[in-house]
Length: 236
Image 1 (spheres, rainbow, N blue to C red):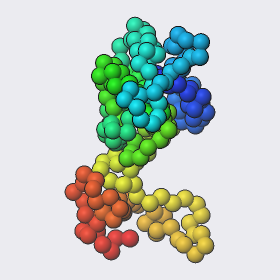
Image 2 (cartoon, one colour; image 1 turned 30 degrees about the vertical axis):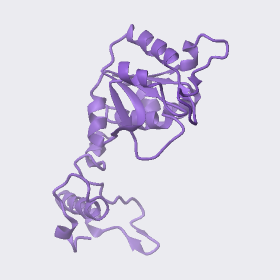
Image 3 (cartoon, rainbow, N blue to C red; image 1 turned 180 degrees about the vertical axis):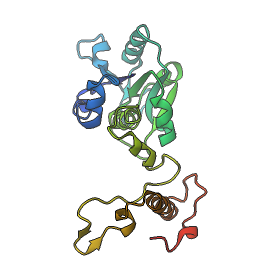
Image 4 (tube, one colour; image 1 turned 45 degrees about the vertical axis):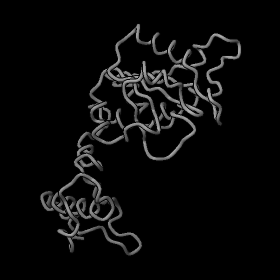
């Protein structure tokens, strides 16, 4: 089982996604324990203040160090964390291999920034890793935390009913996924490729691999793959 603690000033942003679909099943089956912690519970003023203006001036607000330190240090008295992850625009970009590595951990803590970010002393003293989900700015780290949770939890053995489907996921082996089809076999004059109806699994596997190479070469030549769409033209 993996335990993921999420530290946030806005826990309600996480409630619905964490109680739906695959994540809900993982929690109910005991394969993942996901606990949210409200930073406002770790404040000491009557207004439950978690942010303040930045020193030196400038726009935006910054999460204060006191409630973050109190919260994380309290949690550290209860367990040792493999990683304390800050969801940050300037962190490492989340990849499938990174998600795979995180899925093998026992205890993860995800810290969600908000507003202009967090006091730098939190990053220096508490954070062990910083992760970004892309080169764009969001209001806070709650949505990125959900992305990380989803990417990690689905990799835990037994969470997906069809574990074999993980092997064909995009990025799992440096390639994008092959096209997928389902019933009906013909729809509005568009037919499913005949090979998928043949029952010949060897030919189907070969076709899917060719399609993966084609799609990756056309759309994502930056991926770490030795496959080139030019070697596969004509294979449609």
